[in-house]
Length: 258
Image (tube, rainbow, N blue to C red):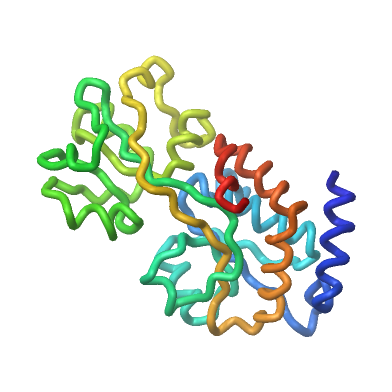
């Protein structure tokens, strides 16, 4: 399957020009957010969902882009300044003047996690509750301003789980991918004790959002971005994407691309 994929994609890329980046062009940079499971450096090894997708692009296209795992604010600054060439982001209005979307890679939802003794099954049930949430994202942009709750900004996902298990918050907000990978104990830095998973209520999911590959408006690799758009639209590479998402417990993430 890998050989077939490489052959088909190579033909498509050649139709748009060179399939690799030559030395005089330099080396493009993929910026991946340092937020497990999207990107992380564990024991000196770069890993994560977006890291795997970037590696698949390199493997198939011969791009040899450098994959950099960096904090979220640095990703945005670097993309705006042209320090980084490519990244993966949700499609959102506030990003449209910062970089250009060139290919959709799948869809994921925001999950509201609560405890069985005090479940949240509707957004309005968060009113009056103490809720941990990340500093940015769909919930912060679209949902939080409509609610009357005590919001606590938490940068670390493991801390959210610990706060909920110790009764310090009534609910917390994470990406669907984060919930699924913690359920599979994929984070080597923290695992929820097995016997305590039963204390969590089923997640309440918000409307899915599209994830996209984006290119910096100042990147000198615009032609490469065009070839990547073609690559991501091929059925063969979409199968590769599905395999990667399945690895993280997200078998339906690419269904929205059909």
